[in-house]
Image 1 (cartoon, rainbow, N blue to C red):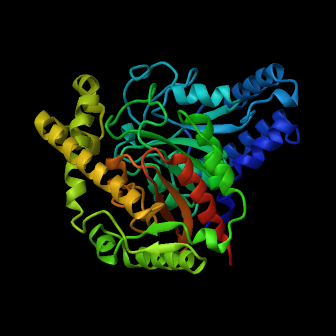
Image 2: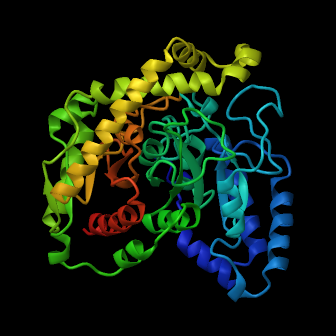
Length: 449
């Protein structure tokens, strides 16, 4: 493992240091750019940008002039953020990992970027994405093992946080594009409830699933970002989780875990399952209630079949105009998905959406009736696969993306050859605040020797 490439930075500490002036903004920008210039040629997390250092210094000077008093500085004052390259940013082109001509994909700045900039953040640059946030990988390498994929489609964002290029990056998830790369790169990835962060200004993949998310070094960083980006945020849950929790209180937290047969049929490897079982046992030993209570059938096709129907249909419609004009510039993997979607009837998509509503209602009712705080599953089927030809298997995330549940991936264990693994914690739709509060507790428990 190339340890020099792995250096995640705490968002909360960095933000506090910049607001207080302990981290002078000009020196911070110089260190940021030096790290990107030194490390990014090895992992290719960022889309190349001429004049990045000059642009960031100019933006930093404007920020200093706007907020000369420490007390007035916003929560992310000066913090460098990576923005996935399907999200529009004023002043930076959007390529979406594609070969389409410059300007074809242009659009107004995304709401999520408006909110980050209003909170004082500096956009460090665009992060590499799989083509159109689908399955054709970009050039990004995994900072832990550069010969392995970082996952995708939010590959550059996850790798940039893992390598310490930025303390915060945005991603999107249609099926597994936040949770899986977070696991592969050994960072925290948070995908909120579907629709909780506005998608305006983001190139669509499948609008029934597309969800904005974030990457950070820890749950506290994810919670800080979520509090600034999610609509109607109520931070009391997360604040209460920061307090010490006794064993009796831990016992009131009920975590539902799947049977081994479900994990095996969904494609999880033996090593990933064994590590997951160890983590669940550690949580139980610490006093949490862990139960073999799980809402999904062992027949994973019950979920994956209607998900793929909706996803492919909507991908084809999202790209109808661009594909008609520039289809010859699309990569083969994306072409195959679009062609598949063109052959799907609208009534089949509607039937799949009705099936989703049935599952969503049933699972939410089960959580409430049984008092389940969250579901636990592995974040991915195993460690990051070798090579850059694939972004990995999204089977562990697919059901929750399909249903719109919020989920967070916490670093939890490693494979025998040192690849990170993740623990996925899934909450009730709309329960993002309580999920992040719970994640803070679980992170603390799992960190204990």
